[in-house]
Image 1 (cartoon, rainbow, N blue to C red):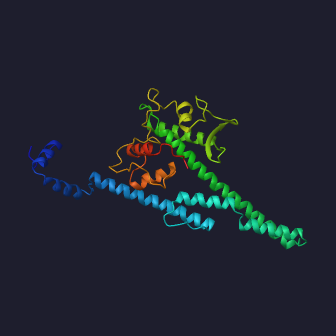
Image 2 (cartoon, rainbow, N blue to C red):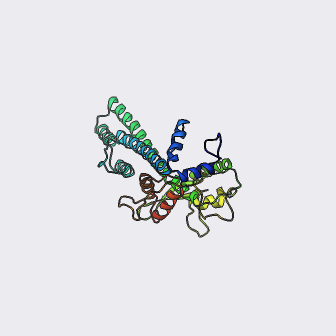
Image 3 (cartoon, helix red, strand yellow):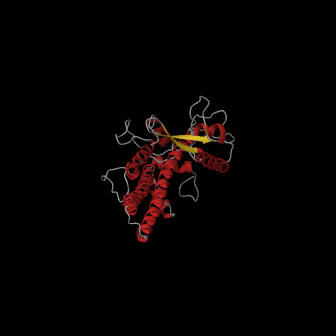
Length: 300
């Protein structure tokens, strides 16, 4: 059927373009006329990468601002990673006496030495209240940092699981949401002899162990306790989980170096590094790069 007729098939149009490549420009113009914007795969990947970079920069710029306003400590340099900045600030705040603590000590000494008038005692109580609130805020920051580590452990576990394709996506997402909440509630931190912090999952006062007697990981709890009803029983542990129910997919052709930069030393930093390269999370390409480069890296 000729293209000048009122209708034609996709195959007929493709054959016409093969004979006359200039028709491709005509087709693009026609699509734009309909109010649609056509993209090549390369253009789409570039736009997606730009959006990811913009959102990542927005998040980390906000964190940097909050850290500075809360602690008064500026970033060591323009290239200091936000993660390293946060770790340094928290470490310094925890190890060094604060101005409040110093002033409290001075007032307590003054009261002991006979300066115990009502004004000094009121000032002391006011500073103690502020110090209590400060310590509560510091504990809250530590808690949020630890929760991020646990969430990363859960995400790693989900990526390695194979879900039952007969289970509806809505039910799978609900199961994952409930499992995540349950595992987060079990998580606690344990320090080893070297002072390193490790995630442990504890129930009824006992550390949960895997079948080999080692501390259980989130993956082990997901596949043996939390998600047994939605996993493909014949293919567990063979990959293809795609996080919170996603389908994976092509993340675009991004060149990933064989060796990590020297400042990427943890899994958290690796995620930031891969995002900046242009890899989209919850894609096959991202997971492949993470699995390859993340071997042996601590969570943080």
